[in-house]
Image 1 (tube, one colour):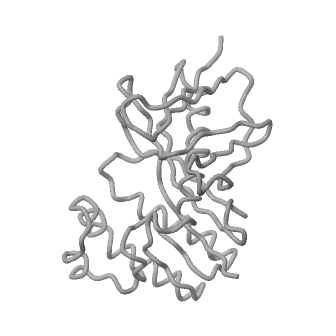
Image 2 (cartoon, helix red, strand yellow):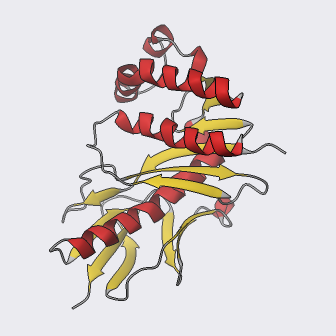
Amino acid sequence: MISIVSADSGCSELDEKFRARNIISTAAVYIEYPYLYPSAYLCESQPFELDSSEYIIRELKLASELAIKYKPDQIHLDVSFGGLELSNITKETLENARISRKGRDNLMSVLDELKKLGTGLRNQVKCDILLLGKESWAVRIAELNTASCAIKYAVEKLVSNDLTEILIGLPKRCTVILTQDFIISKSLYPDEKNMYGFIKYSIPPNIQIDIFPNPTTMGFYVAKITKKE
């Protein structure tokens, strides 16, 4: 059975009106049968502006690190292009693609760097780099992992700064479960009931995390991270 490395970016710090301020986390995951959770992962949580296209490059760089180590059969990126192989994308195909103007502009701005990185990775790992977006469950698992990474980011930001509360917007149909040693991000879709992401991290005892529905956006949940007195 095939193995896959996938990458995605997600989660936002929210203001008091639940408006997104940034894109927090990028996660890359290595998955094998039964394709429900990561066998290995990498995360980076350095926020981007909402309109930045640089997260696409970070996704491929993190995916590259895992791919070089684990030699997967495929790499899936969170770019919705019908499963086209990265090497086959040109500026002409982008201009004619039926995708949003924002998506087109974001890809166009980083296409040359993306293809250069992809060529080097393909030569080293010998696998296809497919632009599948959310059509890939492997990408969905990476998306879930961004939630665990974003929670860790918010906790550490709260602990190291003079803040009492941070609101984090989670991916669609995703909730977070805390254990002694792990932050588990679990899908709430019925057909993904056994699918989850995770990172190894222990929440400090003076931090409280509550999950509740985002009242402004159907299907999304918010994590309220609070520092106890």
